[in-house]
Length: 335
Image: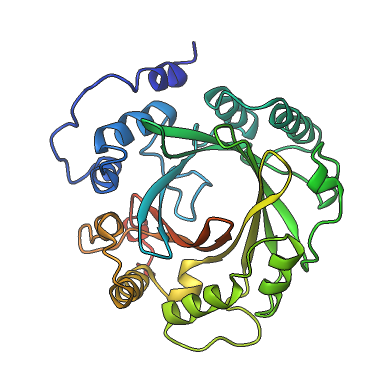
């Protein structure tokens, strides 16, 4: 068995966390991420088991080269959940990372396996920059895994995939460029992530209607206005934007998420943290794990990646990704 996957298979063992070490950024982040749903020890074992080099600084998972990125997510009522995404083999070829990610995420449905095979073939034909990643999120008695596969090539790659919602007309979004395919074996969901041109404020409601999703646009826009503490213009803020659409096993859309870079939306990490905590306080959200994940380390704030605004059948959610390390540790003044 591959040594990385062999370590991942042993995550069920009940070994306590080692003594605190200020220089161990992953250990620090796992202690912050731990909760009643997933203890810190489980986060630490799973991440170290699946990532060949958690201390690497050259991964293209995050803008600062961190191969592990946590995500804090809040429902409209303020309930907090922590998730993570990892690069299984930092610095390796896209083919190797894809192979490790595919091997680590089992239990896909026949339809998901067909999609996986089609994307693997597209990567082999067109090349892959990073190949694949692994997502971890609470579920059942611990952590469930999600497979992310790079979508190479032009938007035509989407319509060639063996998945009915993609072979039909996609929502009209300017400059839609596919980036990732997400496959969740537990929920049976298929998710497409794409870069897009800046979205018009009114376009959010049109997209939801086109996907037959609940009309949550007014509530989402109010949340975004409150988060930034300023009114919205006709076009949603920042130049670099992304969109993901998730479909259930029956082919119906389950959620739409709008993504932007956190520093472009809220400013450098320290300012972003201040804005997020102030927003949470205004809404009565406790945000304990985000507060701990983003706490200053060596007088610096861990790097913040993406802010996501999810509009789903299950309701509205806000999220932010947070690296285990601060970019200033790699000599960037923006922290």
